[in-house]
Image (cartoon, rainbow, N blue to C red):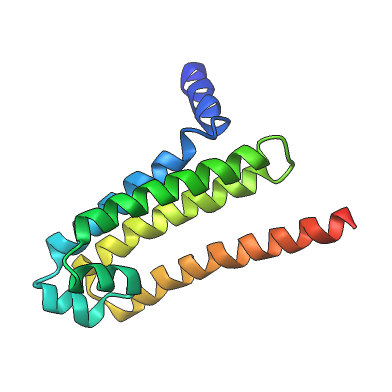
Amino acid sequence: MRQILQSLRSIYHNYRVIPLFLCVSVVIDYSLTFYFADSIEMILAHEFSPTLLFAIRNDIVLPYLAATVVFYYVMGYTILKFLSEEDIYPIGVFIILLMSVTHVLGGLSWFVLSEAYSNMVFMLSMTSIIIAISVFGYEVLKRE
């Protein structure tokens, strides 16, 4: 048990590894979307992401997915690297993990096909944005 906790702590404090969770969750999200959706037309009619819709319409889904994964990793890494010595590092990790869970749940929404479930996933997404903005505002006010 002690070894497991030590391994989890080393992952938690490694700002190079945490963004990988987000990258994997994005791949899972889009894989589940294309697997569970009945057709491309269904995705075009019900998908929330305007960038994914653009990629589908222009037949660039794989380059879009690769670019999204790289972008998420670079942004997650950069943010956590800057926060690694700050008191709010745990919040940065929490936001990245919340976004990861949100992506996986978003992919599963194509299996569930419930408006309430989709709204819940959307609210999780908004929660991560609200937390990020709130913490940023708190840090700005605290440093003045």
